[in-house]
Image: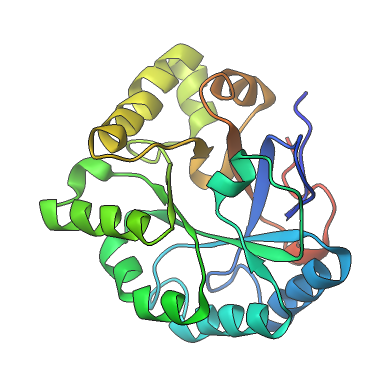
Amino acid sequence: MSALSEVYYRGPGERVLCAVGIDHGRADDAGIAAGLDRARDDGLVVQLYAHVPGRTVAVERLEAVLTGARARGLDWFTYDDLADGVAAAPGVALSFDDAAIDEWWSLVPLLDAHGARVTFFIAYYETFSAEQRQRLRDLAARGHAVAAHSVRHLRAPDYAERHGLAAYVADEVRPGVDALRADGHAPRVFAYPYGARTSELDRYLLEDFALVRSISFSRDPLVVVDPCPE
């Protein structure tokens, strides 16, 4: 069985991580504030994720996270930092999933204004236009991390059960990683689509990645222990 972290990164040694959603319906503003408070008070990195600014998550909510982190003196961590095994410190690891590259690009002035570095977990990369691929390279050049989130965003356990672990990696993981590498990225972390994972998948994927990331579905996700159960 893989050892799971809760949604707070505590330092090197954790390889199966878990983020909590801040999209509409995943958390409320009070819960997010409580999570930032705990990161500050306990010296931990709270892991937050969203999808499409302005659609699945209000830009105002993202701005509140950024200003809340600054007010509490929290540092920013990418998943590449966590893959490097950095020591835990009061901070935030904010990530965005899937393929909303144009909406992510629109956040650049806001992220720059707060000195925030975030991680983009990429799925559907084959659908990106040349301009969108350049935007992703530009985001990486600004200090943001680019990581893998599969080819077609299929549920990993379902695919592996039907076709086998090796087929899941061959069909849904490596082609996306290879495409990102061909465009100059070096993905070292994999985020499970829908957070769907098993310990067997963890072991298999951790042969190729420094870390894997799942997600919490708790109604009060920022204060639970072990939010990513089997």
